[in-house]
Amino acid sequence: MSDKSQKQTKHKEIRDKFHPGRYFANYKTKRFWVGVFYLLAGSLLSAFALNIFFVPTMFTMGGVSGMASIIYQLTGQGDFLNFGTLVIILNIPLLILGLVKIGFSFVWRSIVGTFVYSLVLDLARPFTEGWFEQYLDIRMQSGNRPDPLIFALFGGILFGISMGLILRGGYTTGGTDVLAVVLHRRWPNLTIGNLLMMLDVLIVISTLFFYRDEGKHAILLAMYSFIAMWFTARFTDITISGLDFSRAVYIISEHKEEISQQVFKDLDRSVTLLPAKGMYTGKERDLLYCVVSSRQVPKLKAIVKDIDPRAFVVVHEVNEVVGEGFERDSADFLA
Image (cartoon, rainbow, N blue to C red; front, side):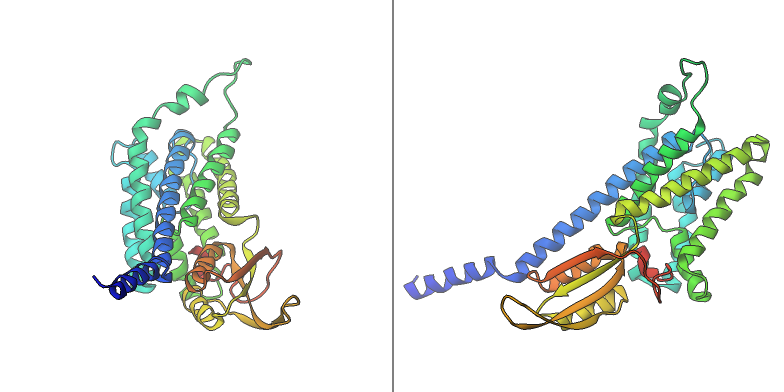
């Protein structure tokens, strides 16, 4: 091989090694596996919370898991079908509805998340069965059993963290999330957040009927379930990114047009272009400003990273946002 050919080959190897496409491919692969890790970790934690705190106490969570819990309790806790199997069966018509009314791009992560979540629930059951009776529901020195409130608190917190991890990985467990988006498109005046709350409240209230054989205990079970549900919702948001659901993002990049268009397309959020000047260099630059839900922040950062790895991004909390898309009436806050 001639010296010229050797130099060309060496230059090609160097160029391929530092080519941006190689970096982006590695970054996307890493992001994919991080998402899978969050999904598996969240599913394992949810299995722990449900099998140890919710099922033995007959507490009911919101969503399809709550409906599955009611059926699971009424059919002998596994004598009919396993918990995870019930979750999949109840999700099938809702996911089909989502595919028809919303589209595959929105629903496919719900399909994956639902399957993994349900599978882990059933696989973890043999390992967690009996833990509640053996380690938690024991008499104290006073002779009394623990207050069920402690189970509602810890169960709600752990289940909330688990849901936050799954959502942080970019997946969902399907169910009423999909139904809420479909109903919102039919009645835009009803926000997705309010629809989810109404559906969850109806599921818990329904236990007053389904658990009526428990007598007065049915009312207490519903009350404890509402407490657990509040902690679940709270710690889901905290796990995702902080205590509120809105973030303001400033972006400085030479690729402002590409970033803006991708944000419009993937997040359905508007972007404002602001003139700016670097006081050190004296150079005139453009600044992109965007307000998104906290659940969209990881996706926004990924968009910027994919287009311009050298972009300067600042994210800060927003105490309150009033306007279209920020009363939880955007389907994207579920993403």
